[in-house]
Length: 475
Image 1: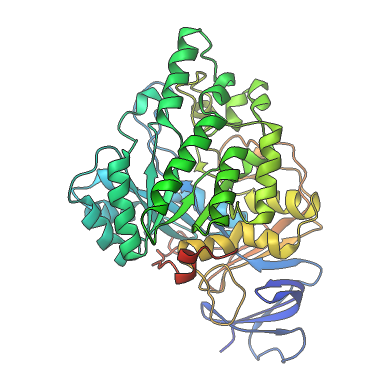
Image 2: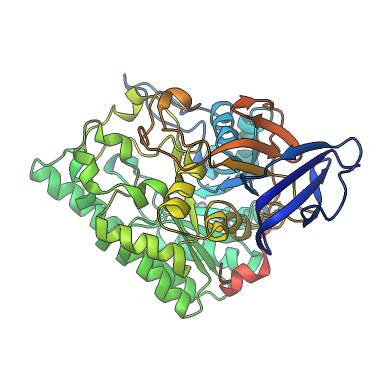
């Protein structure tokens, strides 16, 4: 029985954009057809979305909820949990988030997964999944455990090639251990999701700037620089090329050198995909000099206007496939508590405005097609991360995850109207549209700004990477 019927004249489907009716029964889309081609089923709620944009729910493949972050007084603290971030997500049209399970926080990987699930189950208003994060010197039995996790629906493994800051010793995985993890990924159809910087360059620059008494965070781009990204990306790619079947997803690409490395590798047939963040694409290292400039920062660092050009070019030529947030939801006081190159808080409160912000920047300002925009904020993440076509598509059989954008709502972003933190790095930006409806698996969870969902709504999503991702699919 059809419960919900959405009629629109600008509906983004895998076949293109047009006037379609969407029929929903329970949690699934059961039909997508030319508008008016079949009658409204008796008893169904009809939503008129004519004049609006109907698209799959947004997918943010890179968030950190209930994550370690010291308090301003130096005591141990955590960022906001899924209870807060997921509500912000659905208000902003995002229906699925992917966070991280740190393997080191359990007696083994399975134990770590079970502990992390306690943070999410019954605490999330949207659907969710987890990357497995490995850090430091890896136990000899860890690769086998990773293989089991991949088979259990956790097919993406986060790896650091740097400690990021001098105080975070123990994050970086050495290349011998990365080699072993890549062998497991290739054998079990897992995907390496990489924070890739050259640790030697990064730590050299920390020491150099500290010696020169240039420790202010405004110098961050000198430490986490384009050379570091260039060298590290190419080294990781070279290792992957030597292990047939290894596929890579380069997280938070910030520099043109990273884009170029991905582009060149793809031209050789390497199955590699790129993610950038909205702040890397819209702010530069010059913004560090603005009042409270820390609010624009996440690691590695903001770069230059020239890097912007490459990042935007990458969204069109296939080198950058997803735009994520690196979500860290905390108070302004916590975000500003560090002011040095070695202690500035990373991440941003950005999951709520992401869908609208990128619509404004891509479709409104740069003339991207609606299909390309939807690829970058939803569909590609679903395809790469093993969720498609269950997620990221308006098609029969897909989950009924739907966002409706209203182009008449050209609101100006202010922290007071958002549902995350007491600040936003996007304060004062005028949007070209804003979500007026968010549907999660057939349930209306936000309508005209009113939250109608529940923290019981979000469900963990089993994932399996599709075969074509391992052949370098053009997205």
